[in-house]
Image (tube, rainbow, N blue to C red; front, side, top):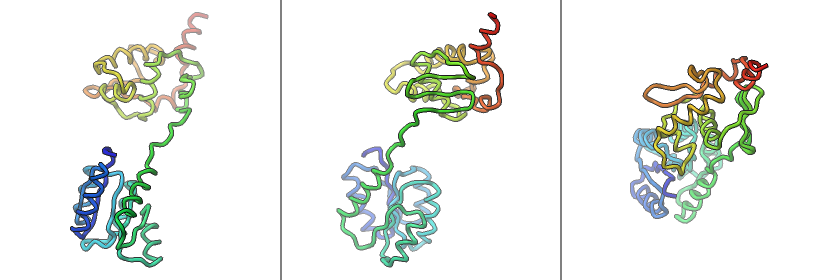
Length: 244
């Protein structure tokens, strides 16, 4: 649980400290805030998985802040001394994932936290990625580019998948190495060798790459725009036409 970050926003300092202590005993990383202003700063700095939010803060509207949190997409456990059905429904509609009325027992609080954390499991990766002229089959580990199957090594397949999945965002060599081969101990510069090999198989002109672009002082970027706009033949098809 050490990787799970929780932010507690509670106006009562004694309760805030008590909740934080119990969560830390379960190995959660905990940050505490006493006001909405402080809570927003902490959230933007640490991006917690779960926010425990006191709806009755004195310096602002907890319900309105919950709506803001909902747009940021953390889990929200709302705490409130208000126990009417209308208050509970209002909190849930504002974006809270659960609502706990004060006073409450510590074991119930911890059980609700753990139940919410279980919801935040990593989504199952899709079996197939379609980028228009590029299709990546994650089950068979095959790649079809512009209608032709491309013969890739396991390392090349992993690298292409990571680049494509980034959706055009440049990735550093270290980040590519970490994502493509998490257990590798290679120097990040070995990425250059794999990129060179991959370009020979998916670029029309590897010397002037348009699909896998080098971003100076950053690393590499996958040009997703060209996949939907390009109508040129694949390297494999172009080679066949030249030999015909």
